[in-house]
Image 1 (spheres, rainbow, N blue to C red):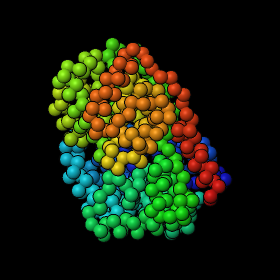
Image 2 (cartoon, helix red, strand yellow):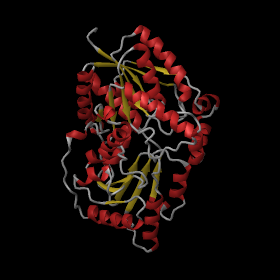
Image 3 (cartoon, rainbow, N blue to C red):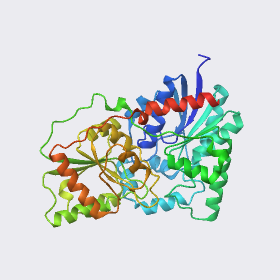
Length: 424
């Protein structure tokens, strides 16, 4: 037992919370265990969140999770609002611009109230356990500061995993110069102390290296989100229906919007050019803006909205779709590489990719013969590609593609583990 390698893992978003950030942490922990690493996690006690996935916890193979309190507003709302329905309604019906304003007024981020609770808990844990490394997955960026403070106090190496960029985040706005300078100060300190920095895309690595120099560049490694073969095993695939099924699985973040897709299909319907044998399904918990766009459109009768499901059920929806929808805003979106793109690839379904045509996501798709790509805001392009994909699927012209192991969670984590073992 003494030969085991031990990790203290900082992950604010952890089951029962759901979403892509949770998946990245869980999959990493799971496959690191196969290489002999035992992991303890520090996370938040249950809060109000846009998605939950209790099943995901079973996949993590974590040794122990230490959950702490926080001064975060959603933590208190969870505890003082008796009805879960009222809590969820308040969260999802509050306009996103108001939530963004609230998030942005905090220094560092709105999770900073978690820091003292998590740091105190970390010191308690470290008195009882010896760890070889502390790993933080960010955002929230508070997690990076927490890992830095633990590393400095306990004198162990720190690894920073960027799911999202911090001061270079394309959708993050700092309300004051103070907010920006404080974040840049801490990001610089964290990166200087970090033994290893992992990022989710090549563009993220390039941007970080450009801002912070060669001293940081040499320790940045790309670790894609990837797909996990386990998630696709024993999934029930329904018999082929008479309708062509378009599906989007996941939530909308940042500048992602369904607005232009809806406008394109509304225009097709107005001109009587929209096929009648189609169904369009959105699976996720959506904010009020997205719900309004879908429910108040001319195509509302063709659209089905299904509340967020477990990750395994989400995969089932992918495999039972004919065409999968992908949304990435053109505004600062060239380097955005959503996690779902890799699962879409593994599902081997056609993709209507409404993404920057010159971005990293488009590059990955095009090299794998996915060519129905246009900007998210290109209404005419969406109309052309939608109709072309409909005909493509309707007449069985499905392109056969091979699965690339490079984009598996297992491959990416094993590659990271080699780097981790070499540098510690």
